[in-house]
Image (cartoon, rainbow, N blue to C red; front, side, top):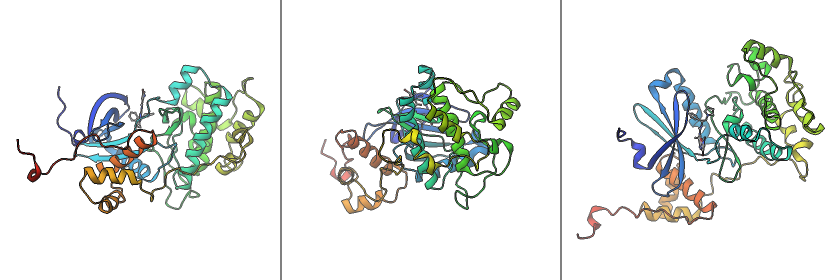
Length: 347
Ligand SMILES: Cn1cc(Br)cc1C(=O)Nc1[nH]nc2c1CN(C(=O)N[C@H](CN1CCCC1)c1ccccc1)C21CC1
């Protein structure tokens, strides 16, 4: 059944579905102007119902967050029935499936991934966001086998900053901090550290530290904070998991200390660098040139339009051209500029 024309198809060729969740599905797509692959998250407003505000929270968060280990948002389109989020395509799929396929990860491989996870979380915390749903399903592998954090629908940007208490109980139970499931007020940053502790345990063990089919029993285990320590874990990794899975959030290691924990910095000269590699105010010259030709604007006008960061087709074309250049491909738009009628060649 041919799909009704959607504004998205003006800019992207939609392909097959690569993921489907409750109120959304994700399709692989090709950006027409650059040929680049993207992932389009399609949400039906009616199906979203009361969850619609979560999408606005996710969009605002992802517009702000530009980091090498956070999945990039390129464009947002909205119709009266749908919201389309055009996001970075990660061909490696979910970290969850990768761990399952390998049973568990050797310590060295877990360390490389965990450095990227801590770097992404430290970055979003400095930007004033707590993710609140950290788990291997929300970490994707890109084409260079590096991790990208996704699903900011449950994230929080506390009004009073990151030391402002939160109260909403959310996220996935097995990864949720004791104070969060207790219903107490909690700090997003501290809850994210707990979830990363569960994540690190899952990476190196291949199973969860706290697990039970009965949610009540699971909550009791989390509040007790007792878990098995398999004999293949090194003393350093056991120490790190121990300081992250402290039931009392005030005894728990914080992100700043995490960045210089000996298990994470093993073999490195300095703490983990969590700063973003992208700078929002430096716009790439080659991209401006290519876009000014295609969109038939002066380079100065093109620069001003890009700097509006409207997350429309201009924003998407800029980021996707930049991606091409970063991957060593020509920084080129594949489609000739549209000739205005008065210049159309005589047929
Ligand atoms: C699974 N898979 C296999 C290959 Br090959 C590529 C992928 C894949 O999903 N790639 C991919 N690239 N970019 C994305 C994805 C998936 N993806 C996602 O956003 N995936 C999430 C996955 N969540 C994890 C827990 C609940 C749902 C999703 C959210 C709503 C509906 C469906 C999927 C994005 C858009 C950011």
